[in-house]
Image (cartoon, rainbow, N blue to C red; front, side):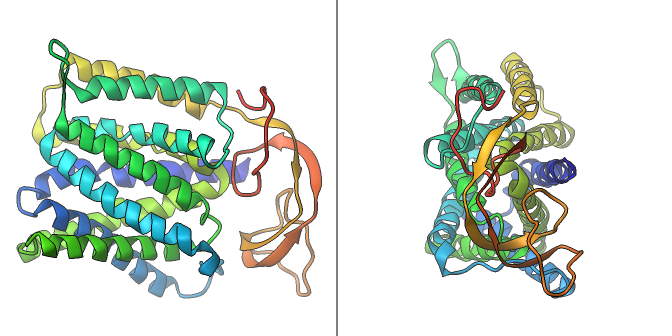
Amino acid sequence: MRDKRTAILYAVLAAACYGISVPVTKLLLNEVPPVLMAALLYLGAGAGMGAVNLIRGSKIREAKITGKELPYTIGIIALDIAASIFLIFGISMTTAATASLMNNFEIVATAMIALAVFKEAVGRRAWIAIILITAASITLSVEDFGTLSISSGAIFVLLACICWGLENNFTRMLSLKNPLQIVMIKGLGAGFGSLIIAAALSELSVDLIFLMLSLLLGFLSFGLSVYFYIRAQRQLGAARTSAYYAFAPFVGAGLSFMFFGQQFAVSFWIALTVMVVGTCFVVSEKHIHPHIHEAVAHEHRHSHGDEHHGHSHGPSMEMSHSHMHSHLRSAHMHEHTPDLHHVHTHGKSAAK
């Protein structure tokens, strides 16, 4: 439970860091071309976390990404490039507050892909949340209910959320690896990929001060956010981490009101209320049932204060550490989340 509370704190910190990105990006887009903006955000994340890695050195051992994870790594970079470009265009075509709130559709996309493709358990409360958040996203996507015209900016934000929903599930498969290394690869890979596209579109012209501000925003809102997000995923799984991440759009909407003094339409307040209720449902979900752990050997950072790491070492190991270790087949019952130690099938009443 202590690890779960720590993971929830990481998820909230990730949300708070990311929440500032949409309104500040909206301001910077007045001076920075959209595809170049996407590139700078990711380059700032990768370079910034690379600097953090150098400062920290090798005091804390983490498992490194290997060739086995290469397909997920390539997929993450490609999806990040597409998602960031979709989001930047969406932000440029709609209000910052609407774009911030619509980012919550990422919860739905992440949960549906986690359920359909990766067989992650989704309980009744999570299903209610998915329905509510989907309804709120549709409300924000419709520009005029009289003629049912769809906002182009909202569609781009939804496409970004779908890309990030798949990317979140790919990232979950790497969540036991070094989070700093993952953020560096994501940031530099997606950043340089977007930079190539920006060059092809002749979008490389930008004032130095706005270039530096964009890189700094990338470090804060993408680099630190993704780092905290991955730390949360280790314990919570993809769907539930995204649920806590739903705090981010509300930060963005609040900052949008402060920066732009926007007057929100009735539909915005309806969607906001529905999303708050949906988020409460998924955050309050409990998951406990008898389950079996199959025998497995893997490497990741761990300590010996939980129910899953009771193996012995030559020298005494009290602090957290990383090495290849084995888990014997075991069966027990406790409250848990769909992390990579709890990948198992469920009956109808496993989660509430």
